[in-house]
Image (tube, rainbow, N blue to C red; front, top):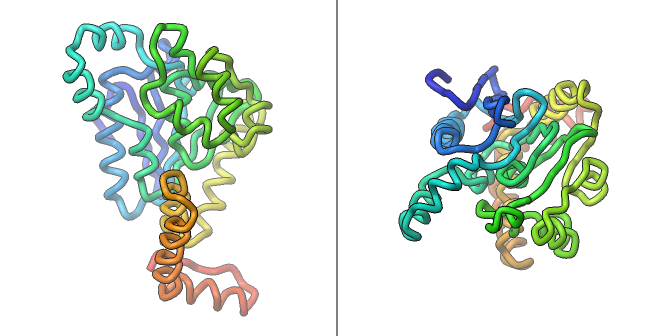
Length: 262
């Protein structure tokens, strides 16, 4: 995608790789990045050929947080004006609303908005030097993009309370142990590990993946039985697809299925 200043986007067949590209500022989130992310996510949502999305950062860090200058500008706005601006900008919720699975490839800092962006992804691969954290409390503010809501769901309220209330950072080892990261690798192994996961996802039915992701996201805001009902409806829809027929046939014939997304 052309015309972007804070992002680099590469769409290679079924895989879209979005790179935060402000390395001299630790890829800090700013107004320009917010607008560009909204545009990119909208395009990816409507692209039926993209089956997996990967987010990563340039220069050895995922995202070091929000740009301090932007926070100062926000402080000068009227309350309602700031709220409207935030609602119109990028939110990690947009990643959850993407139909495609989203992978966060986390190296170095994933702090503040960087941590919140990673929490909006479906899968997280971190390097051994990765650090997650929500340091907003040290600036006299609080997380504003879902950090205080998503982190407890992933690692439990007690652990999340320390991160939110004291700005304690979460190491890669802790992230793996607590269920925040799916896998931890050495920095030089990150690209290969991400490629392996992408290839694993590409072998599966795109329709089933989209339904499965929708059910996982629904589990965050539905109680048990409504969630089970939502899963049931998606299961019923999935059973009659050509991909389901192909998957069953391939299992019986002891071969790899050739899913077509129909």
